[in-house]
Length: 567
Image 1 (tube, helix red, strand yellow):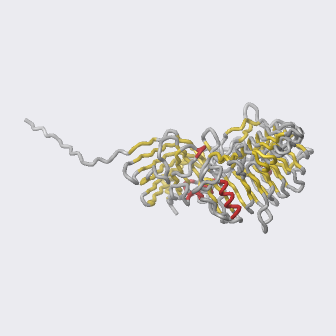
Image 2 (cartoon, rainbow, N blue to C red):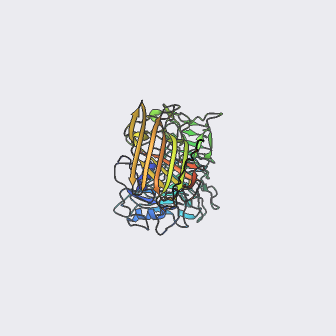
Image 3 (cartoon, rainbow, N blue to C red):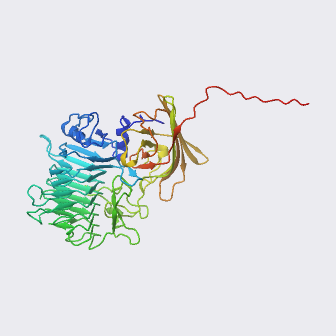
């Protein structure tokens, strides 16, 4: 509806919609959303924690504030950002037949990632320090788990420091695995799979993800018995696919990068500085455009693949997107991974028809605008533009002693970069004027968004054209609250798709209420999300103007004019 505005709270109906858009997974088929609204590592009365969300999905029974799963197409999303430290013994046991766990797709302007990190808190587990999949209860015979936009850290287990795959199928997109460890603290023979251990005959498909500083630790009984610093595939019937993955700085007694019983299908992937070697047990099934910093992964190199080649990776850092990444060096030396993959091969390993990757781990568009005819190997696309760039902003909160009289005014200039096609016009992905934009304001920072805030869905503007200049207007009344906005289209930047100035006013608020939840001063987090779900950005605001409104005078003041008498 033109000028519609959703309820201004993350806890309300609008929130699953907004974060579904922010996750980039808006789809036509119905899904059963289970929305996590707390960073607690265990059960919390009156809230939906991650552990309760997984239980609700597994059992089909509501857990605290988590609705029941349906076992057909359950998806866990988040209305908070930050780190979830799992309680002792609270491994996420997944037996739902079809479950997705999807973190927010926010790009972050702060010093750290602003998505969701799941920490095993270094609690010892027998199998799967953070996630353990297992076949569900009969008659369903398989578990399909999808993980997206998440960081897994400090998992600790005998097998699979972060994940133990004992169900059937696992898909991992745009995730980071860092500082996870596998150690056999039971028999002391050595751990297997510092990040992931595969003990399933199904398919494990990993795309646009990074494994860094994970380790399988040798035991005292078998000091050379640990394998697979990042990944250990110990099932002869498993199918492991790696597409545009970066595996660097992991360690084990053998196969610091991976150890496998059967050759994984590997495409556009970087193995770098894993000790004592990148790959062990068997070589990869080289699908092309891979880089091995040593000589342990490739029996016969595929098309465009390189061995004994330093990929020139930067250190792990916040380079935008929901997770930290390992950037490719661009100066003074250019990484050989840059533009290594011809555009036609910049695809996943879907069967029978591979699909274009479209984005890197940060959800920045592939290919980058510098060379639209090639993509980079690994999880990071050098030179790619973040989906939404905030060029300038002005935030003002005016409070009143009268109920329903507070105002929030936001003025900003932003650019939508989107994909290389720049799909503009009604129904396009990069046209905020014709298709709308979501603007939200939260008390705090992007690295730790609270559950509630001020959320507006500016969908869509009434568009006007004057002297070839387009602008849009929007106005709606929702109870006490009114929302008005004006947006003007600016000339598109050279590398971007569209640019706009936006002036937004929301009046009739109680900013101290639990729903609007803007009770204090700086800092604030400003979130922009496009209507198509292809881009989201979070920007820390530290210079907002916050103060009380000037009260209206209670009486009028008469001003007279003294007449002078001419003498």
